[in-house]
Length: 371
Image: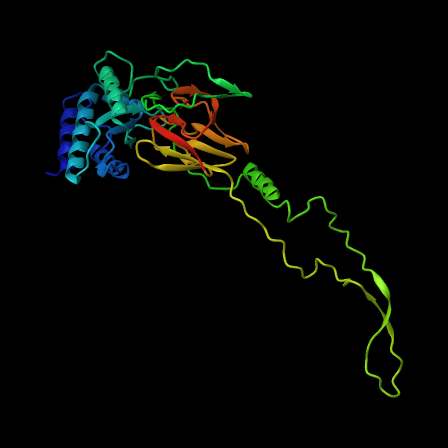
């Protein structure tokens, strides 16, 4: 019996001992999905293939109600399966794998989704403590039934008042290694939609302004395109032709000092200088994965948007935050996300960004770098 069948058999026995009798969906498919997610999120860290130790299973509210009494056993079975599969492939973890169930109200009964996150050891252990507290009935952190949709799990925040730059606060720019912030519950808007990539009017406008600024000596935008120089006539000149007996006298033809031909006809086209819009980088502290933000605006979230940064983390809202650039500085704005946006461990609605700032969205810690 292979690992998938053995796992499915143990889960079936667990459900068989309850009044429900059977699982609401195929746990064998769940195991295959978890394996695939683990493969995609395994990275080489210090020369070692490091697998994601956090496995999150999203379920519908109905399935959550039916399974919650079995969560201690089910999460253990999933963690054991993932650990065995990683050992078979030579992967390692930063700590023992942790599996957890969370409610996604957009899912129908019998449907599920699986996410794997490669978090650091400190975050993993904090999540394990919260999950164990929930499963033991002594806490309200973590787990599928930990909170109602839209209610953020309390997380300790710094309360120091940020300074102001105009109407935008600037967060203290001392990078912190504390990656435990932003550990709230799953947003209630999980459905992932794909959109066609199209140019946005505000991006076109910025590119047009950048092009005009890049050509101060090539194009005079104040010049009158209709006015042309008037040629100077210097008097009659006789065309020099050989004298032929019996031929008529030469005809005097007025000649211009300069050619009267329109200088724009047949002239070489004015060179166009193409400039790239400003950009920035967000570097995932755990995986090393790099995301690029483009001026004037880039959305951050689980939803695919034109030119957006897509983060595969169930704790990130569909449209979580946005990066904007006004020609001088980059800013980040939270878009009313469920779990909030933190910069250097400070919960912010909007703030100016500088090189090295640590942005926390969901479970991800992203280091900001200007290009």
